[in-house]
Length: 316
Image 1 (tube, rainbow, N blue to C red):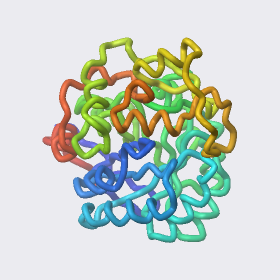
Image 2 (cartoon, rainbow, N blue to C red):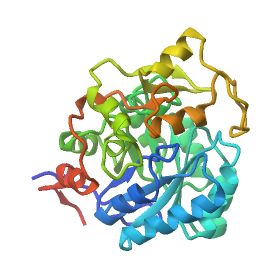
Image 3 (tube, helix red, strand yellow):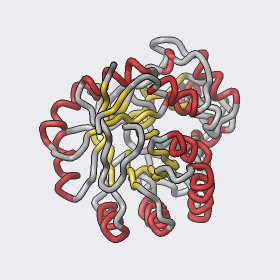
């Protein structure tokens, strides 16, 4: 019998030591976040690209599903609306603030003002130590295995021991968590919790069309490749007609919407992610973790939790 830890993030005590990844744009909305929270994990709404009324509505939807479970929000620091989205979520009583695709000092002020735990996504021990000093309740170590924007070329499992030695707050491991053995391996490795994105993107509750899911199910080992995002970070994605156009330099550049603080304007990342979620692979960018090829079926959130945790026991 495997014994797993109880995760504690500030005042939060989820039933299971798992946080769902915040997958934008609108892949993880209130339905997915609420479903993960209901099953005993920490469900996250992806706030990047959302208008403030939309943020409020998705939190309301998640609360209606969560049955008292923990609902947080994840927003890209690189997004121009980062601070306003996070403050709006805090005003709505969100349970946790998770920040990725950059590092923000301002988020800690919001966390203190509203007594909400702040959890930055980090890719080095130096940034993790700074986050703890500024008031982080936990950190997520994300490496090159993860889907979406990446802060490093190094695997999370190489970075994790360095971060674990550098901080005294809980450290969650992200990237490559697809099945129960991955969960067990992560905790045997010393993780206090895990963050799971790609496996939940391949759930019925994820806000995506069938063609998006089909792209995941057709993926083979080695299909995931690095694409330079206009954010200024590499990202892990699956090949689509859109990425072929980007590589060839033939992708149309739409009028800039001003969604990022800094943007190379190589292509519109927000629109590309919106189109992918809606199933338009001619225009869409499909982010995915390196281990997406191991997913062979779409499951419900409840089935994913059963697959992950059935038969495992926890320390008090």
